[in-house]
Length: 495
Image 1 (cartoon, rainbow, N blue to C red):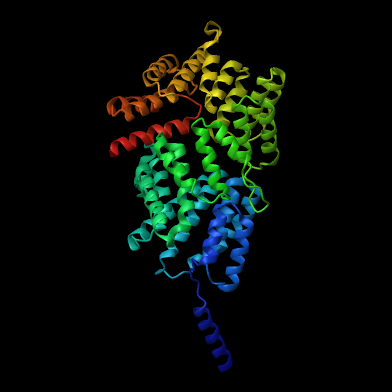
Image 2: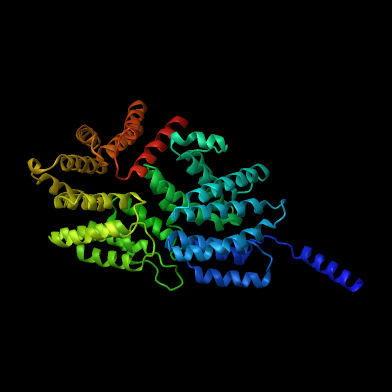
């Protein structure tokens, strides 16, 4: 009995000695960098080496979860999601064994909750995602109170505050019940604070790419301020060339501002290696770049590759629609109809582009090819060519929605060319003609007028157009447009 007693006692003390701990050492930081570059194979090798040195280091569990999260979030493969969901609970429980005095405990648990909430949102698990986000908020709030100087807190906390700030006003009562507070501006400021620290403090430099990624995503989707994106590009251009996630952000920024040739060049020069996780959305973007150059053959090749290999649901409908547009550019209306039939069969209608594709397919109407050409050329930054097409259109043969779109395209071209008085005039015409339409042109025209007047410090006018945008009834790109208008109004209140 004594031998058994001492054996049990010995095992107990050994367990205490090898209790879970966090070591953010050289191997883990290198693995972190590889993960954010989407080079998962090298990252796993580094984490395997770390496990051999320190098997009780739960930071390895956290980084392995990060890999699985990105695999699910980018790949959107439901089979992969089901497989890795089992591993999440095991890793989460290992991290929970950290002592409460560890500043990493709540941080890592909260980040894992946030990551898995984002993953669940991809697959429609909204209740579970909301629960995990609420749990993450409470953990991070506690961690910020207990360890206010701990910089990693502010990246995840900033992301949560941005998300809270985007909740529609009609659901604000829910946030009050669960005591969640935050705004987009507050969240952005927190992430910028963390980014600034990663540039000044070598000990936190490994967090820079993560802060940049979140800021890039937020600024691209919510902010009308090109200066903010220009500043981010300066940071992004300083990142390592083999970082595929940062390359994606650069491409997206250039595409958003009509720098199509630059974006296409970057896409054609992306690093090629089996070490990288397949990022098929980049093939979707390459198809868009070729289509904007009115090169339908090359666009079709890229869209076909995306549709063949991507296992997710988002942007699938739009990829089929863009293939149909390519057929229209080649004067093949019958092929356009056949490809649009696939829009109704494949993919989901969760994002704005897919919703618009489904609406177009359901209408059964072949769109005006001249307006398609003008739209694509504008999106690519080929403004003179786009305007020439608009100038030569026979207005008397256009439907009301087509006339509204033509005015809207004129306004957008003038705006991009910084011909602001003309842009204002054409935006107002767009609103007057299309305010009752379910298309997005009038709503986005109101949003753009709000942005112009805000930049001119005409805040009363800016507010009126943002509110007009929010009060419009339209179907296309609704979440994106309304989110930007709401964020702009929120930012004005904080000035």
